[in-house]
Length: 277
Image 1: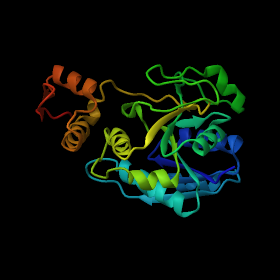
Image 2: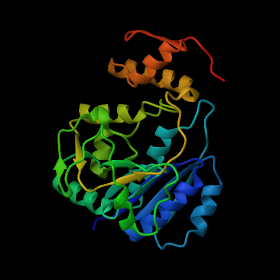
Image 3: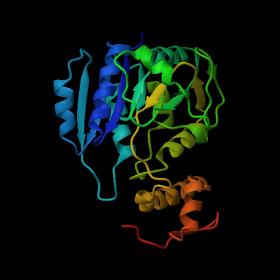
Image 4: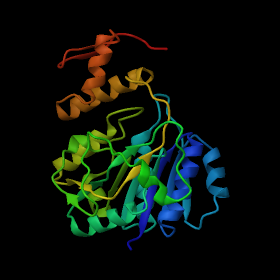
């Protein structure tokens, strides 16, 4: 198997991280793990007391006044993973655990595809469901997000829609990373950086490939819809995205914010007109 390194960006969500570490030990005890801890010393303690034999590097990163520097954190993590010899880097959200065959499916897909962003199906676990002790127990909860493709096990579907990329669970080789050039660090706080990364990949002729059997399971946590608490970051990041690509991202949220008279957005112009405490 290739040298696989999982990269997780974390700030809080300690119980979710503990489940992620536990199930990664079961799915691939030989893989390495880089955790970028944004202003969170507890993560060092969690990694230090973890009983698995996988190599875990925890990299501290300062927070920013404007919000969590997620794009920068992913760049820091991936570059470190590559520097320590990874042949395949798997981006994994701190809220997620991987299925029993996910890393193997990503490795196989990387070996047969050209430059590509590899993505797998994601199931959102219901509230109150704790990831089981055995990996096989995850399959009974499998119910992939319907907006994104769900190929049969071991199948790879190329020429995917880059607008559907998310770093919640994705994989790429160092060569692909070099071709894309990393995440744009102008994105700070919530929203936009994943789609920008995917658009940059598309501009460099990097395919988006959906990988059957590369399942991730997202652990429940409370969310708001629309995410009003991230209004300022979404407006700021959407404006940057529009400047770079000439189209608006996150239009559903922007439209809802406009309906609530928190912003002005008519599909052409975006202005922030309200402050949300």
